[in-house]
Image (tube, rainbow, N blue to C red; front, side):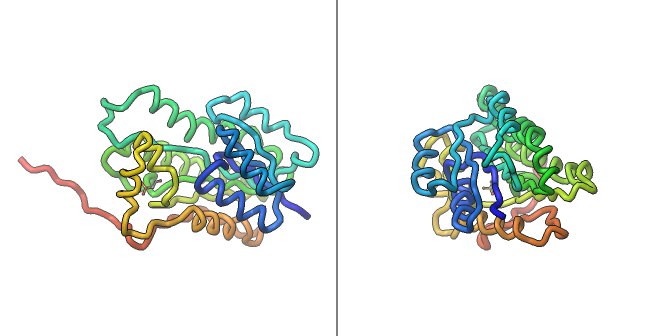
Length: 247
Ligand code: 8X3
């Protein structure tokens, strides 16, 4: 039987790569995003397998409306909470509060609202939820307080949801990648392509396809196997030591 995945932020990066990966394997893909022309380009490419929905995760009424998807697109087997972004790594007082609010609203409130909206469908289908967290949920770095805080929320939300869903057969996974070369850093730097290129230069970052493949693996394990957390990094990314300030 054909399965259906709902992907937020399907217009680029990990969301787009996952849409392609699942459509190529015969899944139906509902993709949400803000950029209509990008959604249209993906729809032109994937054809009937793809339902493009122009939705801004900040619009909670639009998010809630996904609870009423019906007919051919009403049965959702897998929710991929992928939409999210990071503010610049500037000191907190220098970062625009409106921007921080939209990061929190997208990465936290949007994930909660959409999960809440489609959970009855997932329970009905014994489906699954995969949440895109980050290594920033676990490992602090300078300028990452709000982004890391939102991702720590996503990781813990995923674990706690498993408790709520005990006995339902619904699986929940938190995927926690390190450096993946997508538009993530271009967005984070306010459109600075050169800064993004420099960050990923000569270090073989992971690709959106690497993460899509991980999502595919998690989603297609037998129903009795729940992967709680997947943390992955490029081989070239590792850890720095603690910072110590001395008198
Ligand atoms: C972002 C991961 O390592 O680029 O989610 O900060 S990293």
